[in-house]
Length: 362
Ligand code: APR
Image (cartoon, rainbow, N blue to C red):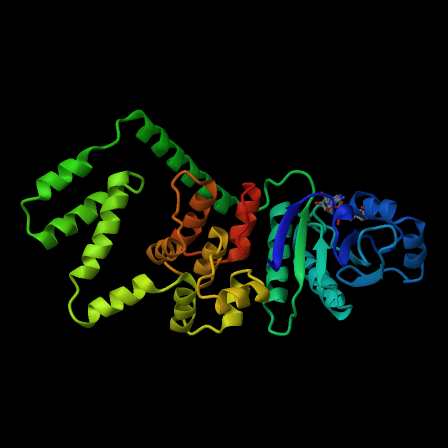
């Protein structure tokens, strides 16, 4: 996964380079700056003394010394002064300059703290949004090679995503919880069988149409699942001529064949799709070369997001790989919320999944 958000201490993150949220003197301080200097040892400050300081928005590189990384990239974020003194641009530049320095040194992996979100007072949600935006822009660039970028969140993982987004997701989760409690309190709705009995006299097509309507509401009841499978095959059986061969092709199509077909139908290149899905090239090549590749659920969802599939097609792709969205899974409810609201930004989705301590997509 090219981009990950992890909860931990950056001085313990094993990667090629870690980024330090420093001050212009580069001679150490508190927060993550203090932690990095303490873990690296005195050689770090000795090398920093030779660099002649660092301007806000710029980045300079030293060795990692006692840290589990080859390099430390020191960058100086903006001090928050209300947001109208160029703070967003300076903060964005910290990520861009650090990433290009890491790329210049051939780093395969780099870890960032949430720059300026501590002593420099940058509002967390905005700092997080700029971090995601700049890292996504860098990783989606054509010429960016295979680099893994980690955003290391220290301590509390809350208050990272936008307030509106957080409220919308919270509401959705509450709704689902109440529905779950209500369903648990009432006996399983029997209208499945009643509905089928009542429809028995109707002509075949009309019966199937209204049963679809009945069962669409009930995503979780067993009869609905059985009906839908029967309906899908019955539906294909009732097709005439080329329709049957089309339908049978779809049924025989493997997940990877479906994926490649959809990439072509969307007019995307493979690279555009797997970058948008936060999937690395190696994993994509495996899926492309193995017709029977069995992806994880988060990989299927990542591609559904990259292809911007509507919910029905997302469910179809999940089913193809043997998965389904569960009304009781926090992660599925969050992903479904983004799809329903038409937000296919996998970095934002992963930000929300991280905040709710769920597995990220990719
Ligand atoms: N690992 C990862 N992140 C950390 C760690 C750690 N060990 N320690 C702190 N952080 C997080 C903070 O929780 C915050 O989210 O790093 C983010 C940045 O906080 P600061 O370290 O305070 O950096 P910043 O806000 O950019 O202020 C920089 O503070 O330490 C001084 O010398 C530094 O003057 C400079 C100023």
